[in-house]
Image 1 (cartoon, rainbow, N blue to C red):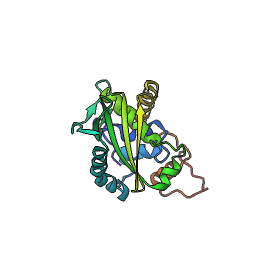
Image 2 (cartoon, helix red, strand yellow; image 1 turned 135 degrees about the horizontal axis):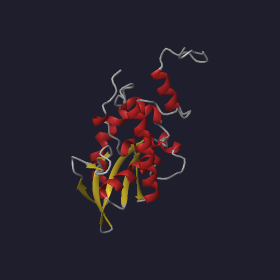
Image 3 (cartoon, helix red, strand yellow; image 1 turned 90 degrees about the horizontal axis):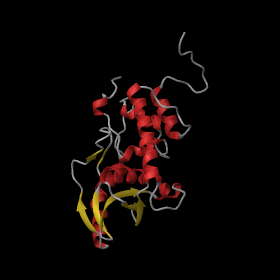
Image 4 (cartoon, rainbow, N blue to C red; image 1 turned 30 degrees about the vertical axis):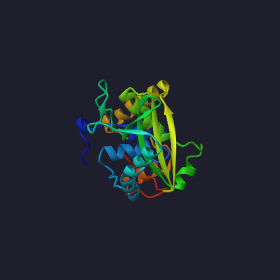
Length: 212
């Protein structure tokens, strides 16, 4: 199967947590399989509804008194890391400064799985840190529509240490793609699904001889 050419290979805010190995729903090996063209990630109904509901979430933020400003359609790119890009949903005026605005949707089950009770789950926090790095902003407002019934608004503050760790881990992941070598599975359901997709002929508990 054809591997994605390096020239077309980018990482961004939405893949930051998975590339860093800390996304609870998407493993490193699954992201690697998707980026190298070995596994296709079809848009889900939840993803489609997320796009459709974004204008409604923005309208509600305006209703609550936030000044919404459009983000550049071309997005942002790290001048030192051409492979790192980002496309924030919008910008907002908050306490006299321009901050990043992100619109999210989440079902009640995923919200409970978040565990911490925070309005901003870890993958969204990682996305916010990457976007703040790319745009030189200090804060990100994340508006999450939970279960289609409740809008939770959370603020993510810029964390230089978190940004440094994310960039280091994303660069490490990028090397796996460049070498066309999968990262080690982490034991998650996502990693298991990726391994099964990569080796569909395999049978559970059966030993295979890989080389002579």
